[in-house]
Image (cartoon, helix red, strand yellow):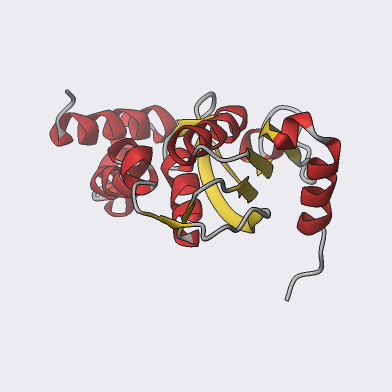
Length: 191
């Protein structure tokens, strides 16, 4: 396991690569390795989280069998290919059988996946897998829309490009009417 001191040294090496070895001692960069490593502890906190723990506390659904949807959940993640941020919004839905989960848990399961080195497809699939495994719903659906820094500031430099990914499980995959109802709910005007 890499130590904090080794991580600081690695950042210092990268700063030397970017600015030149002599520049890393200038006032503005002296504390940068420490600040970067501390910020990474927060940005990548998802590695210390577990979906089973997050979705463990459930409640009796009391016969509710409609769609549960938390939409427009903002997030930021880091592309594992270029270490560039990508940000957007997620819509997470499920249809309970016997158990429901507190709505904050849906946002937290997104954070668990987003706060890791990622690609958008893996986040989408991972959330759907977690919901399916832990809640055993009739269906689970995750739709994510995001703008990627690696597309905006390098390469093709497309500022307005938005990538959309989806994972549909159970009735959301098997029954077009369930998928249609979900999409209508997502497209409703906000409060």
